[in-house]
Length: 488
Ligand code: URP
Ligand code: ZN
Ligand code: ZN
Image (cartoon, rainbow, N blue to C red; front, side, top):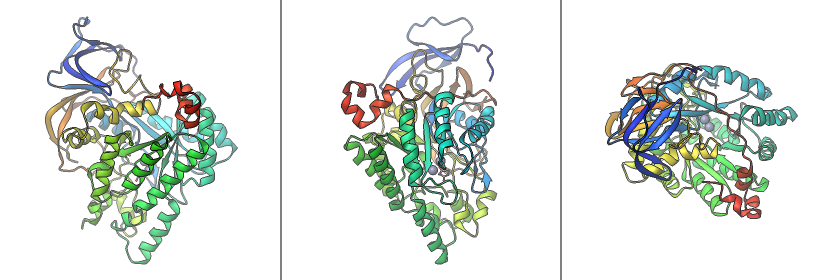
């Protein structure tokens, strides 16, 4: 990481948007942090000036779900930590939370150190969730070390991917309980892996071997069962839970019901699931259909409406991408067998524009709600707030200057991501970044991407202390004043 002093940056005349409101104000960034927000600021001589008239100034996006350089399904994703974070910067995303995914029986700390090494070339700030793919006493111990020494405050559980990284109920129970002890957030990929496995075999037995079988082997009920099971386990153990990539009405409703009962359950939606439907799997070109293979799959259009409603109602709190890119040659590993197509799609670069265009331009979200679901809520849920997720004095100068009037047509031809496909191909979005600041540095200026390897920092995310106690319903009932400290 470069530590040389950077020139101050003065963002003048924009509308500053935070999750709790907006106002006209200048923003001054000095030495990587926000030094002042207001009018008539005392600006150092030589400061770089950005004229933000007519534009919004917002906290940079936080993508809480990416997979850069992930070894997965017999191959490795195209984007590494440099190309992936650079693509994010081009789209206004200044932080990612990626995943350390140990192989079953691999010590957690070994995997964690491997991922830390891979991520050293990141161009933007990053943290890690660590997946719990197996269980024994060493896993329990390493979870403690990760939380207490390494700044990991969330653990991921894949309820799918049988015979690979799937966590069974025993692992879920042990890990959730340990997470609660440590003040860490358990998260789940909710799909019933046994049912997926069975349905995949049945599809193939019926002669369905192409990508059209992918969504058929992972119907909404398979996701809903797992979401409900994870929520029930979390309820019994009295631990909060975060459900990643909620893709269907049934899961969103399970989360809403649990929240209505007072359970601390949180849900994440992917930009892709909000705007792309399952017709993509019936595309006659294998390469196009396979390029959309990800799990849970894109759903019928009525599910998109349910996801938007979840975001609007606050039952679902964050948006992410699950950025996990594979090129056509990699997807072709499953040409004869859809269950071998590496699962994953991109989006880290496009998320903000897609959600602004489909969310704010349609009146579904206000600009402040946009900030909440693209940045602030993830910062709060993963304990990065207020260092990140808000435009305020003392926060990291991770900012996006946003032109709500400018349009762009998204395309593989112009993307910065290394993938050879863009799931948003041809979509014209209104609302694009003109400038992205990462730690006070101008990383993107009107089409000019200035990302540099190694400029991203590993960001430690402390365990939840009293706030986390308040996250559990029973503790909340015992100490109602603590609840006020939670902000979602
Ligand atoms: O298809 C997906 N989502 N690939 C990445 C791994 C995961 O399940 O998150
Ligand atoms: Zn997943
Ligand atoms: Zn994922």
